[in-house]
Image 1 (spheres, rainbow, N blue to C red):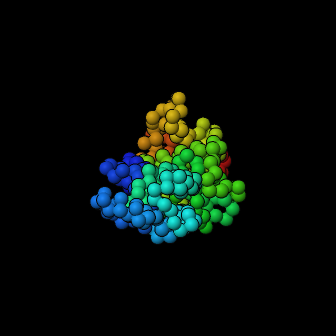
Image 2 (image 1 turned 120 degrees about the horizontal axis):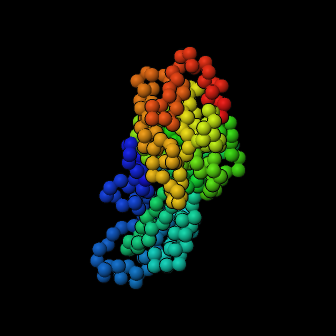
Image 3 (image 1 turned 90 degrees about the horizontal axis):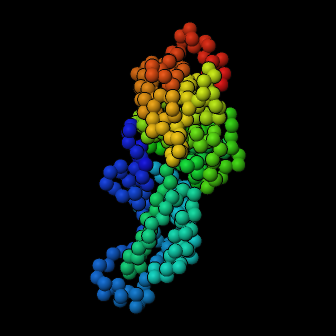
Length: 315
């Protein structure tokens, strides 16, 4: 899943959008070295040196996002093996891989490969966050499926060159969310769908120009009473009226451009990206209505700015 630019997918698991395979956000290399000659492999096995010292390891990370807490958690799993792991003990190696797979931020664990005489490589695929949720005084990252991931922060996390949006009402904290929890309520799943769609359609520099944001998908109708109540609240009292959230992938009535009767998603995000660039160039707006072919904009300090609080907050 890639975030390098508008219209591109995030590199799945940290690879590129083209040729790099998706298995390379993390490569766990345990006390390894390469011995190419099979005779040496047999000799090493006979001498009993096919034992991995799990206290000696390297994490080779490639990808668009990584959290220090994830590296620390993987390291703890390695050390907790007791210090040694027989490379030819399939049950022990599988148990080790199963424990890695149980971590909230691991999407997949690849097939382990013995590196003789005393090494083991384990490819891991990280989950990819698209947003944050607030839990008490902290924020947790959440992937596109709504799974909360390990790694607390006192501010929304940065990723892909911008700040991850917070999903939820601005005044609402989820005290019960823990890493590994799956948030499937519509106000969250719809918010995550908007966040994922934003990363897929907008360049990181345009998202960064908008600043920190809260995606509120808790309302069914917009402030003007029309269907589609998703709003995106920004810093400095700015608000984007987004409309209906994208349909969840795989829904039987899915419209590739968005929901029927709505402006296609691509056009919506192109308009919002233009609004972000306008901010960067000094055009200060307070309300941007992205639901129409020609977006409606209220500039800061205009006569309509005085009515913004009652109009935009009315939903």
